[in-house]
Image (cartoon, rainbow, N blue to C red; front, top):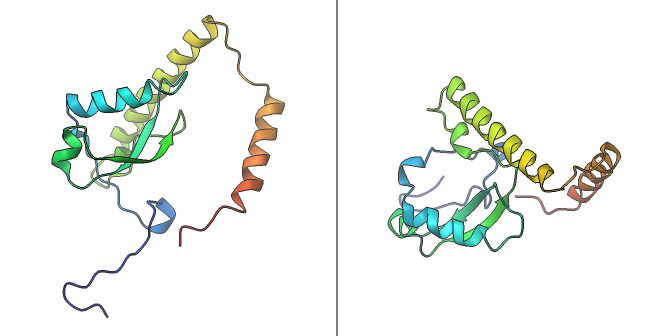
Length: 142
């Protein structure tokens, strides 16, 4: 039993499987914050879409685009975490995903027009198997 004011870390990483609660933070987005993330994204070659998972001391400094630490960068597979907010309807979650996928398909079409080609199904499957093997040795999130 915890005493009043005592803290206890439940988990050190946000994970659906570990009971993390996601909240839609879109109302906190500012131009300064967008500019800060754009600055980072432009340092990553051929990075056109993704989600940055961050830690920050408070919303005010985050909104200024200051004093945040990127703990993970998710590319095309990183869906908007706002869809996991319990206040988000299923319809709104699907709308968000459809917008994301539409954007990704447009980016893909533009990249194909630039000469990029997708990997073969054999290469995709090989990489998938490798990722599954490697995930067995990743540390648990406690």
